[in-house]
Amino acid sequence: MPELMDQATFRTALETAIKGNTANKSPFSIAWAGGKLSRAHLARWAENHYHYVGPFAEYLAYVYARLPAHFTEAKDFMLSNMYEEEIGGDRHTDLLIRFAEACGTTGVRVKDPDNMSPTTRGLQSWCYAVAMREDPIVAIAGLVVGLESQVPSIYRRQTPTLREKYKFTDEEVEFFDLHIVSDEIHGERGYQIVLAHADTPDLQRRCLKICEVGAQMRLLYTTALYHDYVENDLPLRELDLAA
Amino acid sequence: MPKVTLHKRGEVFSDEVAADSNLVVRAGIRRFPYPHLTYGCGMGKCGKCACRVIAGSEHLPAPNWKETKRLGDRIEAGFRLMCQLWISHDIELMQDDALNAAAPREG
Image: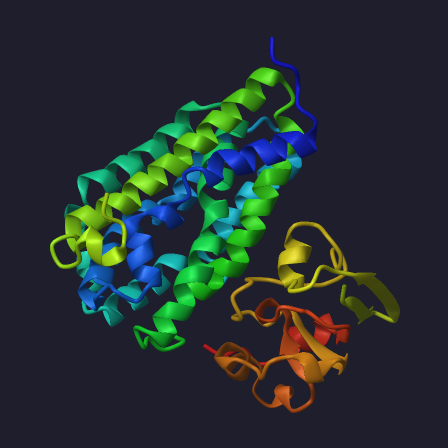
């Protein structure tokens, strides 16, 4: 029977579960970081990304409602995370639409769910399912630790490229800048909550598994963006990724 | 490791932080300068994390577009937005919440 891990061991295990499937490995992310995408490719990304991150406060709201009342600090964190996504400053999706418009698409196209790929719809559905059905601490592990905590490392790679290679202005890439700060806070607070409340071997095992699956889902989504929108223009061999 | 000193309401708080630390991120994850540093949106919009740099400004990058937009003339007086800075050298700061609340907001 597995034993309860101490917090340091458990944290390392969570980080390892995520690292093995980081979205930074996907051909879309590699092409992005290398400055090889067109603005049209980035527009398709924005039209999909909106439907993954747009409902993030809704995902968290389901978890918030199901967290026991005495998990006060965890509940407060979820509430502030929702607030920051929507009304703490600029609404995050408004900044995503600003970037999308700079890529040549429109707010109407971005908001239209018919413009997301089936894989994006799958990622969005997985997020809703986790939020509604999993133990709330396991859900925080999946959504916040598994998905949100990856964002700063992804955007730290991608944002300089947006300015230097794609020549976007500071205001056009504000969506990416702000997530380097906010998601670093959210990701780390998510870790703190999971480390504190996953207090049985079974809960720890389920948190590890959902982190692994969450990272796989994000990698799947990002990889599908490449196959759906980029592959015909930019084959894998041009990314030095040919099998 | 850089030493951060924060003057606030007549008190002085000081501790070392890891190099390349963002003080708003640290406060957000409940580490020094938590609970002393006031902050808000983390995106250079609300101005609640503004501090006057008393010492160490020579190691900071020039104010970015958000700081310029949000702080305006206060930049000349040494104010910076902590959410926009990654600290790698010793720094001494003063924060006045009343002053930040009274500062005009950009739209």
